[in-house]
Image (tube, rainbow, N blue to C red):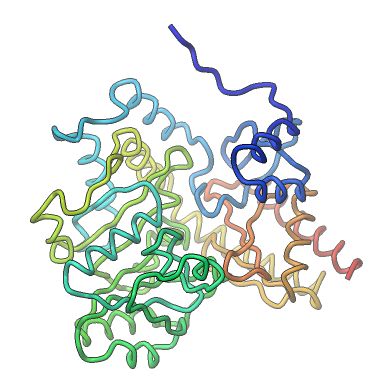
Length: 418
C-alpha cells in the first residue's frame, strides 16, 4: 500500500525555488519581502513556520473565522473522506442535503434553495447566471467592490487594474458609488432588466461601512424597479460582522446571497449561493442548466455542515460582536496615541477591521512590522493604504492582548521612522 506523507524537511530556499520554477515568480518575490517564511502547520489562531516561529493569524482573508483545523470540522471531514470523499453525481448524496439544511437553517428567512461551489467567484458566476435566466441582462455593482476574478465576476469587480488585461468583459455593466442610492436609482432605470450586486461592507475596498439604512434603501429600490438583488456575503457572512449576516443587520432579504470564506471552516474550500424559490426557479426546472463536477462534493459538505454547527453551538456570532467592539475601540485609541500622523482612520464592524494609513507604502511597512512581531494581517486589494485585521472568533483574551501590543509596537516604531 502506498502511504502519502505531508512534505517534511523542505527548506525555505527550496520552497521558494519550487514556486519560482513552477508557480509564480512574482509570488516568490513577494514572499522574500516577508523573509521567505514557509508555513508548516496551523491550529486555532496560530500558524507555525518551518523554522519554528509561531504567528497569531489575524489574516487569511477572512477564511479562519472558526480558526484553523477546528477539531469538529476536521473530524467531520475525516469521517466523510473515509466513507466517501466524492460522489458519482448520478445518485443522490445525503451529505449535500444535510449541509443545505444546516446552512438554510441560519440563513435569512425565505432563502431556502442552495447551490454549492468551490470559491466565492464561482458563487458570483452562479448569481449572474440566475439573474440572466430571469431576463436581468444589465449588471450594476458598486465602485471599488470586489466579487472575484473569473470573467463574469471580474466584470463586477470595479477595479481597472484587474479588468484591463482581460477586456472585453461582460457587456452592460455599470458601477455606481457605494452608499449613493440616488446614483443607483438613476442607473436602475425603468426597464426592470437590472441585477444589483453589492457587499454589506466593502472589504477589499478597505473596510468601507455604508451609511445607516443604505442596504435597506437598496433593497427598496430594487423592489420598486423590479431589479434582481444579489448580496455578496462571501467575506461578511456567517458571523464575521457580529451577526449571522450583514443582511440581518440591515433587515434585508435579497433574491440571492453569496456565501464563502468562513464556510470552509478553514479546512476544505467551499462556497454557496442561497436563493429564494422564485429566484432559484430556473435551476429547479433544469438540473443541468448550471452544474460543476465538484459542486456539493461530500468532503466539502462535511466541512460546511460542521462549520455552521461550530459557529452556532460555540456562540461565535456573539463572540465576534463582543470581541470586535473591544478591538475596534482599543485600536482606535492606540492609533490616536501612537501614530496620529500616520493613521487616517480605524473602522470596522465585528471582526472585520480596517486600519487606513496615510499612503500605501506605510501600510506595507505596517504589515512588515506586524510580521516582525509575529502577527499576520492582510492588505486590501482595492485600497492599498488599508490593512485588514480579521481575527478568528475563537481568539482568546491573551491573543487579543498580543494583537494590540503588536499594533502598538509597530505604530510606535513607524512613528519614529516617519
